[in-house]
Amino acid sequence: EPGAQVTALVIGTGYGGSVTALRLAQAGVDVHMVEMGMAWDTPGTDGKIFANTTSPDYRSFWLRTRTKQPLSNFLGFPLDRDVPRYTGILDAEEMGGIVVYQGRGVGGGSLVNGGMAVTPERSRFPGVLPSVDADEMYEVYYPRANSTLGVATIDPAWFETTEAYKYARVGRKHAQRSNFRFMFVPNVYDWDYMKQEAAGAVTKSALAGEILYGNNHGKKSLPKTYLAQARATGRVTISPLHRVTSVTPAGGGYTVTIEQLDTSGAVTTTKTVRAQRVFFAAGSVGTSKLLVRLKGTGALPGLNNEVGNGWGENGNVMCGRANHLWDPTGALQSSIPTAGIDNWAAGGAFAEVAPLPTGIETWASFYLSITKNPHRGRFTWNAATGKVDLDWQTAWKQPSITMAKSIFDKINATEGTIYRTDLFGTYKIWGDHLTYHPLGGAVLDKATDNYGRLHGHPGLYVTDGALIPGNVSVNPFVTITALAERNIEKVIAEDF
Ligand code: FAD
Image 1: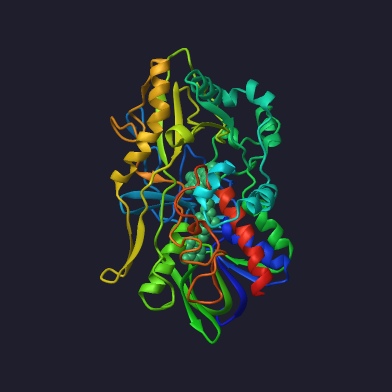
Image 2: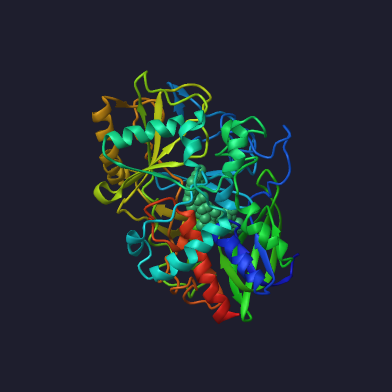
């Protein structure tokens, strides 16, 4: 309510925000969460909450009139289509020559992501978060994150036999014949539910291709895990379709300005509340843009010059390979990936064997690689336009392509196969225009102290992917969750 007093206000309901809200509430603190996206708890016109990946509709994109699908083409045909402008679930935000995909709604990225829940190899951790005690992370916070998120690995016997993972078995065979290390990738999908989908006993979700625009059944997204537990404490309230636009000091606390949106994205009301403490959990891009603007406009003058720095895209790059006719990858492909190829040490790339859930045989193997791209972008305040700019360049993806080629050139040579050139445009091999994994912009121990307290303004914290300086070496959400667990434990002990 306008004019309300809040003990702890959390901006955003993704991983960082959900961990923070749950642990504060369990410590007896009342929490209010503000989320610019929708609640995603009500079925749409077709009786389902979320749209299918193969048929994007009004629910699929955040305030766009035309879809912007990560795979823009297939067999020479452009895939994008017109949709009504709506506060949909996936934001394809274009900045500095890169499209940054992000989830919008209560649950943040957990609503749209592939659920791949990967803890980085311990030997790589000092390169990911140099100021964090690795022993504590691997003994306490990674296990806590994995168990609360409900992470599990596929039953290997089922993997060997189900039609739905033929594409992953083909991916494994090709990786191993080129002497790469193959690994199962854990996931938050309910594997028992998926087995029942395959048996025809329950409504299909992963086996119906649901993923990018939400998952109607088996995925344990945050509203089923951290946020369910947070709500059960009775101390957490959430305002969907509310967007924070300003945070500024006032009488020992902060005045927070919030816009209420309707589903066309129009602002219907602007409210201010008073908060003793504010946790920025708007995601790497959301938090960085807010902080850079608040510093640039003088609303938070004490923030230091590290704010906006150290942004990376986790080296994401995609590609497809065309297999021989005797190597079909299957018409039925589970939308939930569970296989990976690790060539990080030798080539700087970790590739997941991704599905192409088109419902038809494609003879394609498709991959999302995470690479050790050294480039870092920076968010800056542009007073002339009144906007935050990101200095990133499309050409900065070249090291990622080179690293991904360390895997796929070799596989193509061994198998006598070629790259697909029909997935990202005409005659374009590399999906180098996008990221699913924005990280950094308010880096731990630089823009904040070693526990996410923003320098210059006591009572302000960063709790999300903005803390991580650009690369995790694997998919990021387990690390974002574990880091948030570590930081909030310290903050509760010392600041409350
Ligand atoms: P987010 O989860 O992005 O949450 C931020 C929230 O804040 C959002 O809900 C947003 O709407 C809200 N917000 C932003 N600004 C404001 C504001 N001003 N006011 C109010 N609310 C605001 N990672 C993995 O580990 N494994 C995967 O398999 C995987 N697959 C992915 C697939 C896709 C298509 C995408 C897009 C991402 C994927 N990711 C995956 C990445 C992962 O989802 C993100 O790293 C993660 O969600 C980031 O968590 P976060 O807490 O930093 O922020």
